[in-house]
Image (tube, rainbow, N blue to C red; front, side, top):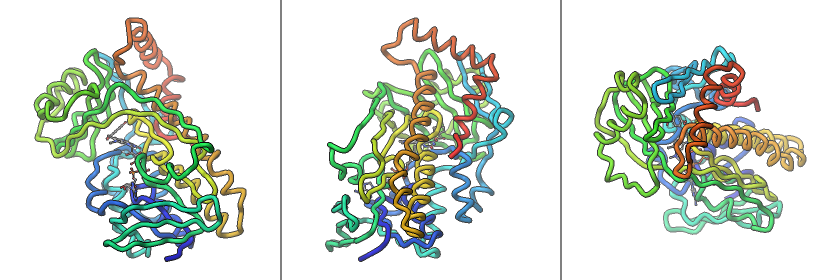
Length: 389
Ligand code: RFL
Ligand code: PHB
């Protein structure tokens, strides 16, 4: 089989990229290892920046997002008894939208057939070949048969564990990594949220986050040591812990209910440079990971896709090689700023096991500063809504 762009991975990055390329008249095929149902069963991101919403709008696939997404004008940082509200709308003139990654993926998946975006699910043993040439290709197996897909470019949208990044020779790359000494234990439940805006809490017992998916579905997290096992966290224990860490006001508004999903996700900061090698471009989690504090992961995948579409459209329209050559630097400039924000909000809102009284005093001083300074709040707000492209 032959196409112009082979996309590996049908997560949000791969599907967004596929639709945007089709809209530009570029042929592409998406190869996904899992079934569509499996991809939709992963509960992940919940907060969309304007850039991500804008890409769905550009595709004309934002009808459900507009109808069901919750527009958020602010969020809160809780520190013991105190609640610091960051009035994002007043400080930046912009907002974020609560709309689950699962829903974004579903909207993109549902539109694939009618827009002639070919997605091949259950593609096994995907391997990349000749990425340094002008005629790279992908081999894979499908329904027991070996297959080959030839393309002018391959785009790795295959997440942190996929094969694309690993196809680039080690001599050509640089990796930056920070692994955190805790994970987020998340719970999804069909109960109304405790607050209409998100609350990130730093409590003596650890971090907590109150988030939501709708007026009737809540998403909460607590941080736990990496040694914890999910079996040791029955729902009641999680609700008790949330009530303490989020503080009395949020606890009073909290409705408990049975979990419909529960999992522990480790926290990591990771950047892989460069994001292009020859005819291979990387987008999203395949090239970088942020800790979830600040909700940047999916949004960064979307901004990578924006830059990749710009570069690929330039190449297929008028053979603009500079656009392809410039992709990595353009994408990385925004990636590093989001890495910094996610890392600093993680540092501010979590109790690290190695921290002593000095580190805690620094957190208190920073939270005091944020509480009292419009400049500090503006800095947080403009990062939260998403930096310009
Ligand atoms: P994905 O979503 O991992 O998709 C990659 C796809 O590639 C497929 N794949 C392969 N396909 C073919 N062959 C192979 N060998 C393959 N190997 C893998 C996979 O099956 C999959 O379908 O990466 P993508 O598209 O780059 O999207 C990135 C986002 O998923 C991720 O950054 C966010 O979920 C991160 N994240 C959040 N981001 C936000 O912007 N806002 C949030 O509120 C937010 N909350 C979160 C999060 C991530 C979390 N976890 C579990 C890591 C909360 C959590 C708990
Ligand atoms: C979520 O709703 O899953 C969520 C919200 C904010 C974050 C991370 C995750 O920073």
